[in-house]
Amino acid sequence: MRARYKPWAADLIESHPEIIIPDPENFRGRWHEVFGNDHPLHIEAGTGKGRFIIGMAKANPEVNYIGIELFDSVIVTALERVLEEPAGVPNLRLLRVNAKDLGEYFQQGEVDRLYLNFSDPWPKTRHAKRRLTHESFLKLYETVLPSEGEIHFKTDNRGLFEYSLTSISEYGMLLKDVSLDLHANEPEWNIMTEYEEKFLKKGQPIYRLEAQFQSN
Ligand SMILES: C[S@@+](CC[C@H](N)C(=O)[O-])C[C@H]1O[C@@H](n2cnc3c(N)ncnc32)[C@H](O)[C@@H]1O
Image (cartoon, rainbow, N blue to C red):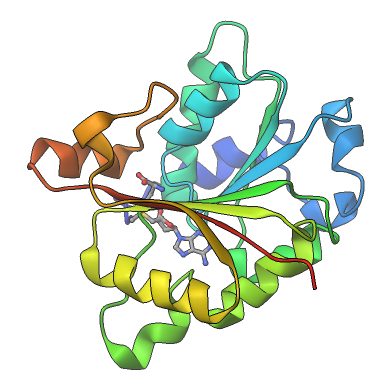
């Protein structure tokens, strides 16, 4: 997701260090102190404008959430949405960082679940390593999740979904739940993302899977 350049975004982000944590490496292994409780921690890599992670945090106050996004111009919208919430969203924080550096911000087992929603498909074979379900990313996620931690993934992109099914199975993960049309029978717990709503309106099926790492 690219957004129009917003020259004011950096200043707004900087003025809310209580929401967009400016120095996340300092909290590696200590995120429970940031939230002030020992609730499970779920993160979303590529959180975009935050609709999903804010919705999840409001629906599940007993879980802590962190949304991770690469671009100021995108994450600033998530920040604005949090600021619009009358009671705030106390169980949510945002990080303006690259998901490829997750290991710098979380220690083994500190993240209880990882969400990937409508990740960039990188359709060219020579860009396969950039896909967030490439083997190298699965290896990275394994370093921050517990031994049987889970990844929950949604996409509209059939090519990326097929690639991810293969990549995840070849990595030795257990595929627990696979849907080729999530909205044919939408579960009541589903929280839509911006992209999900957009592609759903166009009549495209939404693919979803849950995958679990296996302890040896
Ligand atoms: C296609 S958008 C989907 C946004 C949102 N998850 C949704 O479903 O509406 C993908 C988002 O992932 C972000 N992104 C891509 N690679 C990333 C990375 N390595 N680390 C953090 N964010 C990333 C992009 O900037 C973009 O906002």
